[in-house]
Figure 1 (cartoon, rainbow, N blue to C red):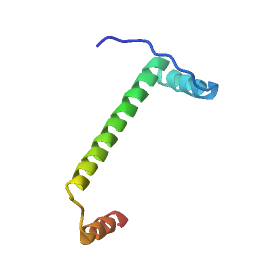
Figure 2 (figure 1 turned 45 degrees about the vertical axis):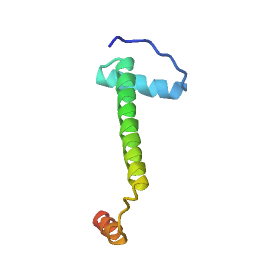
Figure 3 (figure 1 turned 180 degrees about the vertical axis):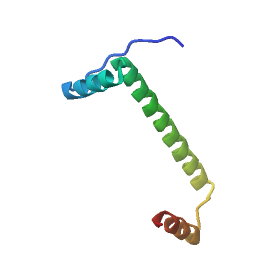
Length: 78
């Protein structure tokens, strides 16, 4: 897929931080922005898939029992 230019406005502090990171990593600013955008999109896609799966389960009346919920909470408290 071809590349396109996108412009947006952000505060100067973020740009300075980004440029500092790019310099330390010996990478271009655009590489870091592209990587950050790709990560953001993937996280949002995952989150939306999980929300939609949860909504489908709720609509199908597929809820965890009280014992299952307690067991899950206990597992995460360890």
